[in-house]
Image 1 (cartoon, one colour):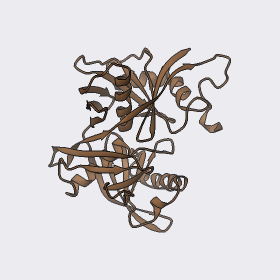
Image 2: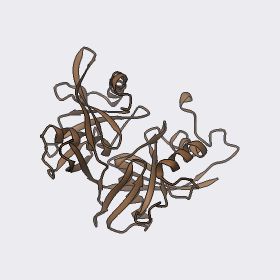
Image 3: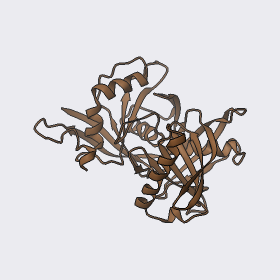
Length: 309
């Protein structure tokens, strides 16, 4: 089997996009995702797992649009399964389509399993993503970690997040390995009450004075996001909006753990229910055009199982 994929990164976070046609059946992106999970999950493990991939990678597959008014559909996946939405991955997919000569500057609509999203490809190759409606679910949920009392907001931004302000601690000065272990423990406590949550986002003071905040984001599969995380930034804006700390249209500069930046703002969807429509702007860079080979004599052609790595 041979398969063409395009590699890119957005703010340091990689996206591996399948551009070869895969015959996925369904009348919605959600149905196509279910079909892929049942019949083609070996593509996910082959592309993301070792020895061909890396656990930190997010994968995407570009689909023909179901609704002719839309540009394309997209499914996102990672080392442990499938994602409802992915902000950095969407920006990577748009840059991939531009690099292939299939997308010109302007406004485009993409179908995802959580709804249609609008993207603006700028002349300078930046991408602005108008994400799905985002909102806070709960405020100040208390947890204790290593004797410290922390408060978590639970919010949705295309995925479900527990967001914790750790600016009063030295946590973000610690290593990524330490923060990963801490975030895994936080997630285990959060999911007792909120089982839908699969991301943890720790916020602190930015390194650059040009930015508003710095974050460390734990993603499903226990890898941290090298970018500021598009869906996580959306969830953060939902909390800021609900608290009246950020007015509509004002730019929020979110700094990642490695120093990359997303610019974000929002408009109200429903001010009474505190539901917002976040916009995320960043740029992706294509860094690979690969012809993937699956040799039937290779015992690891579909990836090394995670319990062996």
